[in-house]
Length: 314
Image 1 (tube, one colour):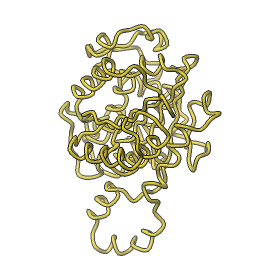
Image 2: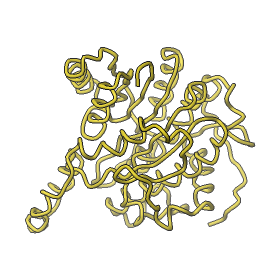
Image 3: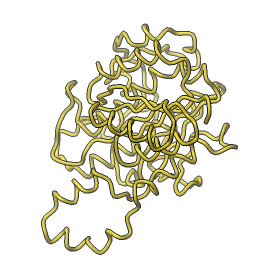
């Protein structure tokens, strides 16, 4: 990874931190995109000392804020000469319904809409550095999710676990559609299932459960992966030779596996794409993102809403 630049969202803890550690050890310039800059700087210092790689830096990014995402992308366009790998790893906590500063349901807002906007704003850098890779950290839980186009902010009958599963389905569908859009550009897009990992988010979820539930699942704690183990599939997709032309796939345990039936629905993927453009107020050329390679970052960051005709109706 010498000479390559990697952006990792949520790189301050868990899977993101372990991914950053491995890529830093391999010589990459690693940008930790973190909401908590204090914690991020502590992790960056730890990784620099542990790996000997001084090119581990922190940049503020709050995926619950469309403004913050645009500011991050603008800073990247001015500061970084290239972008070889984008790891969309960060995730919102599973808990009672919350909304982002833009009024989006938090899990869909961070896990999907935030990463959707971030990725599209960084596409020029990825294309200019091709062959480059986008890796979306999804989950096998996506199989339970359901995209409700008439209630995308999940205001009715809110279930936090179902909201999480739905956001992960959105990650898989986004991967599928973006891979199609990026054909011929040298940018590959793949989704990964890290496994069931003992992270801060998992710990928080379990602590919210009644005592009897915690006792019931206690014997299974020993089956959970460590963050380092959970990061291996992401690392594989970031560095493995031979994956330069592998795109639109779903990886688990460092190999391609079949995605769920709901994750193969091209009609839903296209409809979600169009809706997502509206929700994040992003203007994109009507024909294809392939034509946008010469567009300036400033024009992408203006944020004018656009409405496009949909091929699928729900």
